[in-house]
Length: 398
Ligand code: AMP
Image 1 (tube, rainbow, N blue to C red):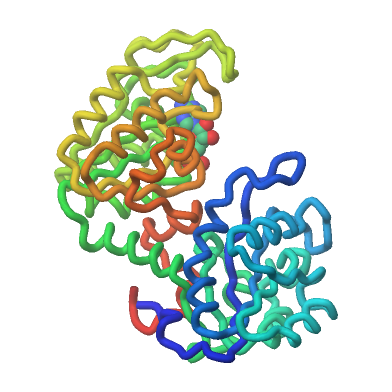
Image 2 (cartoon, rainbow, N blue to C red):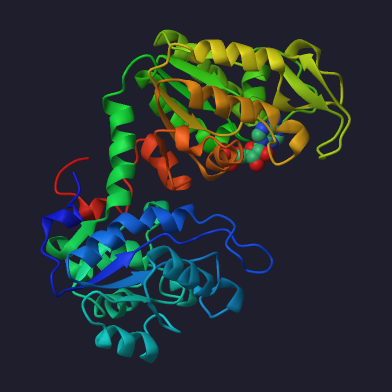
């Protein structure tokens, strides 16, 4: 269990909230998806209602430890001002003179947003000196940045040593992320079905291994399905196959059988002559992928099969698209999967940035029980790993 922000008196304090405002921007630096900012609002509003002042900090993109205008948090500052309908202050640096003086002048009920944490080299190095400078701006630390909890960075890990367990807390978003992943792994309503897709087996192998003893059915789509199909002896043409993982795939298939997990693989695919948005394509059974062609989406029969397998699900975990959804022509399998999952009455948990994107594009976001804001972090929780950003906030085991 983590220490909740509700466990402390915030009145009159300066509260440092580590958020994940790493939002996508277009070429004009417009925010194209502000879900991550919106997800932080419950914690920010709670703090405002409890009479403290707030210092918000986040990273954005991957600057190399120096200021770069394209990574400035200014667009986030503008969007936050609008979403909170409140004047907020913006520091031009992270722990420099501007941040220090603005933090000192902060009155109860006021908010200060710092510049991009990664404009400081110490952030990604988990540097204790930089963490100390950050910590000296505030009285209390709150972590609400689930998306970076798998990273040992200064504002996530080293800073908790400066504040100590007594003054380090988890925000509401972080608590929700932990609660959903733990409920899934420990107390799922059954049948519990995991739908896994995306490009590679390598990225999800550990998650698959941790899931198998806990689930009733496993549906595998996307590029990673081809390594499993190859393991079953099929010729899948030029489809994505990780040859070095064919044996591991066999182990997963065996383990699923041993644990009585029903495993579903594609029976047909949309095959293309090239990896391109306008490639010539046709749907064929997985036994009949023409030489030189590659499967870039699941086919119509597979969509029906997967829908059937999901029919009686009480809990569904979905991580990874069913095809190359970025190309319109190969997005149908993922869109259909999104609709099918959204229409069930099951508890539906979506993980991974790409999958969240598919759900949003399909217009199903409001129908899902929970959409995780962390890609790598949510996968690591499912893998059963202890996340470095969560560990210092725990009073006992998760
Ligand atoms: P991941 O980050 O592992 O969840 O993978 C997401 C990526 O997998 C997306 O960018 C998809 O385009 C890609 N993907 C899904 N299906 C396929 C496929 N059949 N062949 C190649 N890439 C795929």
